Image (tube, rainbow, N blue to C red; front, side, top):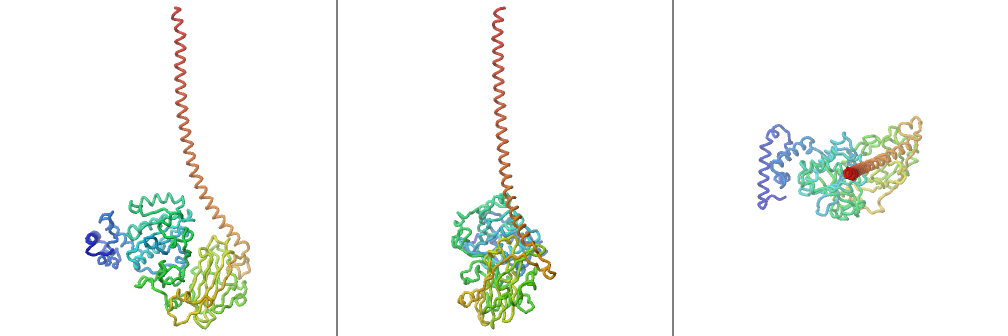
Length: 536
């Protein structure tokens, strides 16, 4: 929104709102309720103030939105948040990310609802992360509005989180006003209807108009086919995958695409003036040097849960390694997943050792990224060093492990190269890239806690797998029962109304019949009395 002579009315409203806020909330300004950096921005940046001005609201409403926004920013420390403020697992999950644009040029914020789980302990972190994403977008693309796409396909009752939904609504209503163009609810399930009724009461008529219910049949009215995922009827084959360089580079979805072609927003340090700058080899090396170091001195990103290391019961490392032209990979053929004794996620490690004389860049891909968390999924290995890649199989997918594969890719990197990490892969000929595939298997062997003593896991893996299937079946059965209960209630109401109508009709009929009978009896009595009177 340009503020010049042609927008005199807006400039007057900006000055009015600024004066009203500074006078009405002077006590909060003096007490440190707000971050001084936000206060200074509000005092000097007319475009920022203009985002709180909406034609269907009064200046007093805008003033309260400013108060709520500045107070919220101070409470969560929004100005000091960086991508490193959040765990790697949160970025790897891919519950929300920017990708592509709608027909009007608005950036699409995609939210995969089926990946969300209600967790009161995690909710504050999710709120901060969502606010950080919106803040980064507004800094990098001022004036560019958002089309928020909530993918509800495949979601269930366990994904419904009213507290987080309220926060999303408040974010666009008070914290980041004028940012939302519209909200698309894709394939909303029937059990979200009650939640929608609650949410609708929180919104005014203007915001209700911005919420659109879409299906696979009509979503292309808002998003072009080439900007839409395949499962929604589009042609975009993009699958979200966390890459360590996302923290350093940005404005892209697929790391193999040129920077100009990438449209999904990723993040760097918010203090950097170029939030979405390209990744140089120096930045990759800096990232690698900041990671934890294993016994061999290699840069690795350790899992907070500590995935189990390979144990002596497995084939020895030398005998179970694939020796490629750039990397030695252990295991050689299979990634094995054995359920831990505590019933947590099954996991395994892939050891990558640089046997080349130059630096090597690597990537680890999988055929089913929604099932696995890979840390790190790409990076940089120095000559003679090795990196340990932790692969976690998420719960509920044990039965389909045998269908999946992992692909390890590697290429030689010249130390003096200035290409970005993505450009390295694009510029390197395919025959110069080393590739090695690994199968996935679910074993019934020994887990990390019992291998040393020789105690077998026995039927642990199949039992947990069977339990996961039963839980999924139970959830589906619960949903069916809920639908059946609704149908039963409706049927009972219909039967009750029908019985009441029949009773009323029967009552009216019996009263009418009794009336006719009384009249007949009286007539008969009168007819009998007439002859008697004549005889007398």
